[in-house]
Amino acid sequence: MEKIEVNTETIQLDQFLKWAGVLESGGQVKLMIEDEMILVNGTVETARRKKLHDGDVVEIKEMGSWQVVFKGE
Image 1 (cartoon, rainbow, N blue to C red):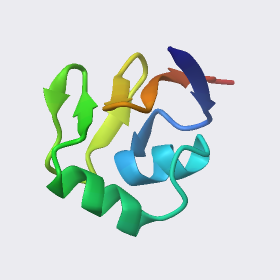
Image 2: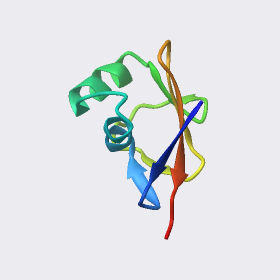
Image 3: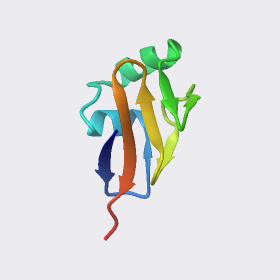
């Protein structure tokens, strides 16, 4: 699992996946959500604008997993 540092206390799922360089567009996120390929903390996610917090784990089936790490000040 790769840890991805963010500068905000929350970040939307689609923004996080683009920030991490996992996916290139919100459209890709939307399609993967429709295909139930994205899990947040082990649960299939249905909202691409889901707010993620420090410690949340995002997994994309057959691609990998990433943990949100709030960098703080």
